[in-house]
Length: 284
Length: 75
Image 1 (tube, one colour):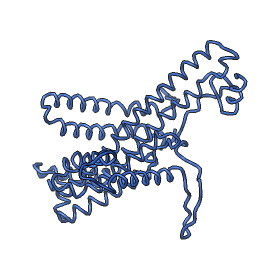
Image 2 (cartoon, chains in turn cyan, yellow; image 1 turned 90 degrees about the vertical axis):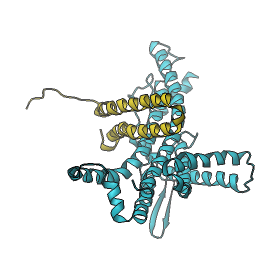
Image 3 (tube, one colour; image 1 turned 180 degrees about the vertical axis):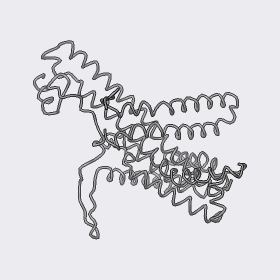
Image 4 (cartoon, one colour; image 1 turned 120 degrees about the vertical axis):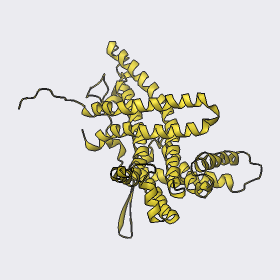
């Protein structure tokens, strides 16, 4: 028994008790995966990695769930249709109508797709065997935020005209004229340059930080586990067992915490998208 | 020039600690005021909660950037 565990420890890296080599703290390398396959399409090399596959899976899952729910929609919903309608109403009433107003209904398909797709991508962080939040790859939130940016800026120009749109975005009303010298550059910076950046960084950083925390504590549980507890019990190995058990509990608790954060961040991203679209639709 | 003081070790964690001060205060103010607002006017719960979460997300992003920056810019 103990010989077996020691063998596992010897090949599985280092524990505090056996062949200590220092705590192997996870770095950003846990976010980079080896390629699974490599395709050449139209002279472009596409390297398929785990996050890419998870992205497709979440797209398929979201489409499948809502097609299954609404394919044979009934007037009196039951089962899956009930759940799906609740999700739809949450986005329509809680996000679109509350933020944009009565014109919000037009944007429900966009916001609905974003909310559930991002949520599913985030959930990949705690689904066993997937265990990687796709949105913790910065490129993916950047792509999402770019879509929203390319939606609300042209929409504002189309709805209000270039001049009035820029005026409403950069010149807050009821301010002394002289202040505009200072305010216009600040508003341009914050509304047109920093806004898409923070929109994507918020989602990325939350998922990155959450994944990193879970990884740190699960590695700590592994590292502190005393493999020599039976063969050579001493104070250090009991301390290690205590630390290992505590880290395991924290890992489980953080997984639960992440479950909440994932839903919250999908909501926040969608809510901010609605707030930005509102700037284009309703001039203030 | 001789060194008067030097900081060694994991500078990233010190940076994160500094980056978390402001957002920590900010998140506290947001939820404190939010709960107070809900207590004063429970019927406006929906709007208050939405704005509370929005403000929380905007503030929290600063702390998270502090967490991610050491990984991005190296140790």
